[in-house]
Length: 455
Image (cartoon, rainbow, N blue to C red; front, top):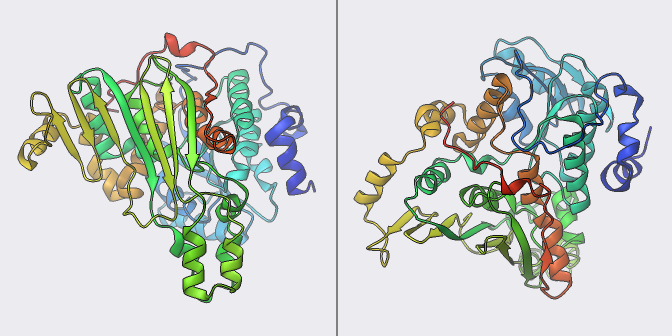
């Protein structure tokens, strides 16, 4: 069996040809020669969304159950390295009155056999970051649409691999950015589309919260420090998790659909928080304190982006901040500003102060996004981060069943995720500006903005 590090090297960086030549999928979805932009891609409508699911550790089990409640959608196969996880999620499917899915487990490459199934038409990747790209590439090579947890890729090189494979296979490759489907985010999108905020000028986005407690646990024998995210914190700096805040702001500002990100400058603080917290809790010479000394990721990263049309976006990231949780969802235009956490709006001619609670409630009622207005209650009932996850998955399946372009395409996923590598590059070069690749290759100039949908 191919060792994990060898497979990752082949699939994620310089060896796309090695992935594409796998014998298991030769007759099922070889890349086509008529490569071209997949902006606005309308794939043939599916009669049923038949999902092959990879990864049922933390978030995966909830997603499996939600998918079972989406019309004309069926979970036909589940894969994980661990047999007990697969068995538990398969039992959840049966408990919901659905046919038991096929089970794949026991190997880090068991997902390949699942992707090769002829009855799977959508592969759902819910694994750790380092497997996102290899699994997405193999799924598309096998002729499957694919959706992938955030970030969709951790390097610019891997972003390009996903774009090229999606273009060659003419298949959907979507990053599962659930925050774009939050009630407040959809409300903000509607305000922007209706011109209430005027011409959009500046956005602010973030992922800030105190995640130290998850790693500095009593009596866990250091297992938390072996978790894949912590290993990334030890090896990398910059913004490792940009998409939750950035995704909605990019949709407001028509990034990749009328405008594009142009350049980025990024700076990070030194790492203070994990080490001081570990030393205080366990002692300065404890194994936990010594482990945290290896962290390279700064306590706070701040990136400033300029767009091709001269707009700006600030993006921040912190996982060891003493600040309350925020995604800093802010969009400002020539006629007003919306900010979230908490939700506030200021409009001309009274832009010097936030609206009263009464006026804000009236504005929310008037400009509620029809997608949330129509499906919000059932989404909240089905769950997943307050309903955002269900609404995202419902909308994905709706588009696949009706042959519609997705709300988030491969260009969105890689553009938002490219900040992982670009921010680190800038930080390591003293905050020097770096160019943001145009993954659309100019298609952003004529692409239509994301509309206000109901279905």
